[in-house]
Image (cartoon, rainbow, N blue to C red; front, side):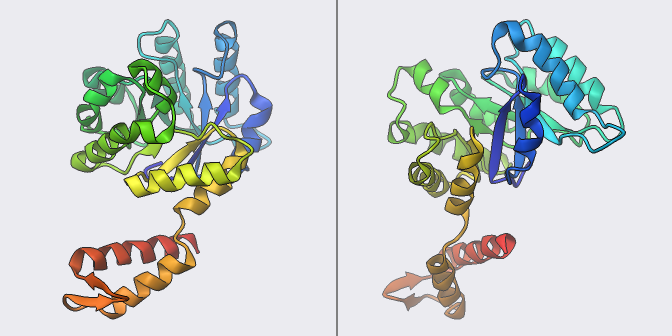
Length: 276
């Protein structure tokens, strides 16, 4: 989870889609018990999720994180108790917990204390209070990385939901994650599903802000997001030219090259090598 570039949501009340989501090529799958499930279907969804995460005699369980309902909801305690109990089963498919509308670092500490150390914990920042407390959330021991819920955040602050109206929030999450020494956060999913170009543009914006990946709400988005976070041929050629000139303050293609630029070039080559 710490290094995943794509995280694909699948509704918790659609168990027939669990395996399809797992096969869609995303870095991780997040089974959703919150927004994607109607209130009267949540109990059934939890049962379906537990069944999907359980090892079976005929095959492997679905490996996924689960987004539970908010900490102040009536479903939260039962969901956490059931999921953590399932994680005690050998070969359980539970990878971690995603906490929506995360705002309270102390509450996250209590949850983390109940969780096995191998499970990921991902607070989803979706409100003004959560954003103000982002550094505290990121500093909770055992938090894997933060994620951004732009739609709910824009609603909370009464802003337009377009990408560029939330620049400050995106920058704040990246800074909080870096200052806390955890992995770069996951950006909010694009609301475009069929327009791969728009999804890629949104993902490139996130990458340039310093995000480490992006949430996805449909399998068709996975390839576009992955491609936007993968260095292009031009990126690699530029990085190689910089590395060849390493050793002091020099110029490459009319640009001054010093240590920070060289380090950026090395990171590009590392990402490119990882994707091969």
